[in-house]
Amino acid sequence: METSRLLKIALVAYTAFTVGFFIYLPVAVIIVYSFNDVPFFIPEWRGFTLEWFVKAFTRRDVVTSLWNSLYIAVFTTAVSLALAIPPTFYVVRGRGRVKDLYMLYLMLPFVIPWIIIGVSLYIFYWYLGIEKSLLTAALGHIVYSIPLIVTLLAPRLYSLDPDIERASMDLGATPWQTFRYVVFPQVFPAIVSAAIITFIWSFDNFVISYYTLGGELTWPVWVFSVIGKQRNIFPVVMAVSTVIILVSTVVIAYIVKKGYVDIL
Amino acid sequence: MRRPTGESLQRLRIFLSNLPASAYIFIMFYVSIGILIAISFTVPRKYIVEWSFTLENYVRIFTDPRFLSPILNTFLIVTVATILLIIVGFPIAYYLARVNPNLGIKLIFFLIIPVEVNYLIRVYAWRNILGENGFLNSLLLSLGVIDKPLTFLFYSWFAVVIVLIHEWLPYVVIPFYVNLVGIPRQLYEAAMDLGANRWQIFRSITLPLVKPAVLTVLFIVFIPSLGEFAIPSLVGGESGIMLGVLIDRYLSDFRLAFGAALSFILLLVTMGLSILMIKIFGYEALYQR
Image 1 (cartoon, rainbow over the protein chains, first blue to last red):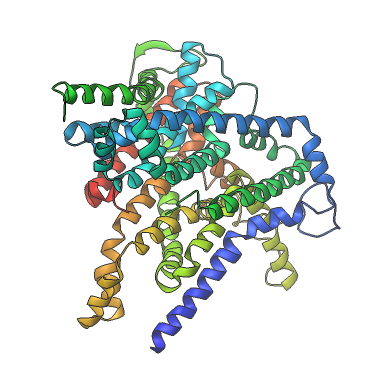
Image 2 (cartoon, rainbow over the protein chains, first blue to last red; image 1 turned 120 degrees about the horizontal axis):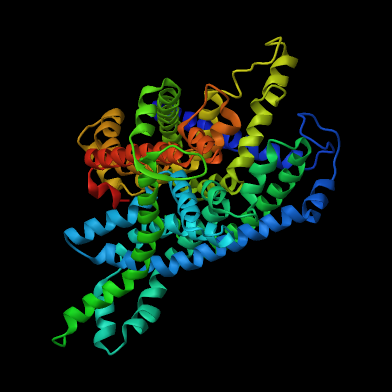
C-alpha cells in the first residue's frame, strides 16, 4: 500500500526529528559545552577543558548539595515504600464505597500541584515552630511519594492471583511468610521500578524542597539559588549534569538489562 | 478452614497495616492544608497571623486585574502546552507501538535519559538556545535571515510553552505508548476484514481506546503544570507570568494570608478540574492501562 509506506516514512522522520533534535538539543548543549574552555556560556567553541569537572567536584557547596539530595531521595524512597505497600493491596483488593473514598483520600496529594504541598508545609512548620532541615524536606517528599507508589504498583497487583496466597495460608504460612515468599517475588520487579521512579522524582524535586528546606540545600535548590545570579557558575552546573547523565544512564541501562524492572 | 474470628481478624489486620500511611497523609497533608485554608481567611499581616475572620484576601484577588490576569494566563499557557504536547507526542507513541514495536522499549529508554537532567538546568540550557545571545539567534543572524536578535523567543509565554513541552514530552509519549500497545491486534484485523479504511479504524478503534492515556496525561501534565513557578520565573518574563510566581512572591515576602488564599484558589481549581475530568472520562479509566 503506497499511502501506508508514505505514512511510515513520515512517522519515522517525525519521530527522529522530535526525539533526536528537539528532545536532545538542550542535553547535547549541556554535555558539549561542559567541556568548553570559557568560564561562562557563549554559543561558540573555544577549546577542550576538564577544568569545570575538577572545579565542580572540589567545590564544597556543590558536593554537599548532591549528598543532601541523595540522602533525601534514599530516605524518601525507603519510608514511602514501607508506608505505601499495604494501602496498595487494600486499594486493589478492597471493594465497596469505603474503598473508593479511601482511594480518593490517598490520591488527593498526588493530583494537585506540588507547590500546594510545599506552601502548606512551609506554613505548617512555621506555625508549629518546627525548624526546617533536610528531614523536614524529606517528610514533604513522602506526602506525594505514597500515592505515587500506589499508582505505580496497583496495576501490577491487579494481575496477582489471590488464590495463590490463600493456598499458602492454608498450608500454614503466616501472613508475613506469605508476603515474603509468595507475594514479594511476584511483585519485586514492579517494586524496583516504583522505587527507581520515586528516587528520581525525589532527587529532582525542586518546589517542595524549596519551601521545606532549612539552611542546607539540595542539588536542584542550590542550582536555582545560584543560576540566575552568578554568570560563571553555569559551566560547573553543566559539568555536574554531564556526570549525572552518565552515571544514571549506566545504572538504568544495567537495571533494565538485568530485567529487574518492568517499565510497562 | 476459617476460624470464626478469621473475618474480623483479617479486617483488623487490614486496618492496622493501612494506619501508618493514612495517619501520615492525614497529618502532613490534610492538617497542613487545613491550617493553610484557615490562614487564608485571616486579616493580611506581614510576618504574623491575626486570627480574625475576613474575606478580604479573596475579594482583592477577584476584583484586582493584577491577580486575575496571571490566573487566566496560567490556564492559557498550560492548556496550549497540553494540547501541543498531545499533538506532538501521540504520533511518536503511535509509531513506536503500531509501526515499529521492536524499537519501542529502546526508544522509551532514550526518552528517559534527558529527564535525568534536572529540569531547572534544562530550562537554563534553553535560555542559551533561545536567548538573545543564544544559538538560534546567532544562527539566524549569521545566515542573514534577521538583522537584530529575536526577543520574543525568550522571557515570554512562548518560552514557557516550549520549555513545558520539552519537560513533559516523555511523560506524554509513555502513557500513550503503553495504552496503544495494549490494544489487541485482532481488533484491527477484524475491522479491516469488515472493510473499514485507515481513517475509520483510527477514529472508531484507536481514538476511543486511548481515553485512559489522555486522562493520565491530564493528571500528570496539565494539573501539576498549573502550579509551576520555577519555569515562568526563569524564562517567562512579564507575558509568561503564572499563578505559581504570584504565590511565591507573596510567600517570600512573608505575607502568608495572601499567599495562602492564592494557594487555596489553585487547590480548588485543580480539585474541581480533577473531578470534572473523572466525570468525563469515567472512574475506570484511572485503573485501565
